[in-house]
Image (cartoon, rainbow, N blue to C red; front, side):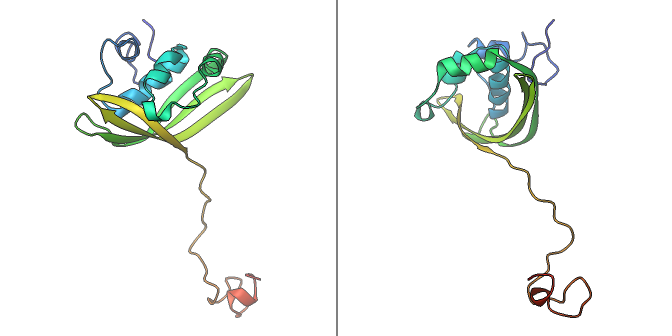
Length: 161
């Protein structure tokens, strides 16, 4: 039995396939996110369009989306965090990392996806890319603090120039 691409460890026929085929709705924002990833893997791109909120469909490139899904080798979905989006919520946020290979090059997409539930149905509304945050080493030095190099001067007159 084929394992679902969404990463739950369940069989595709028990997990995302019934949601994608319209046999049952996604009960949570996370379930919709997982099913949308699986839809890319199985090139079910009509489902991607249908689960995008109607107010956010403008500019959707059906042919380009299908071609991209067909020509990509899907390597996995990682759910980083979920905020709201439960059965009784009307909005939710799912942070995820999707991995695939496109034209021999490994790709990674890290996003915070926003979801809205209307009439008992979850929709994707928008997504914000998550960028790498700089690594801070130790506490921040203020302009008027003594310089960390040990010169005895203020930071702004020494290494902060």
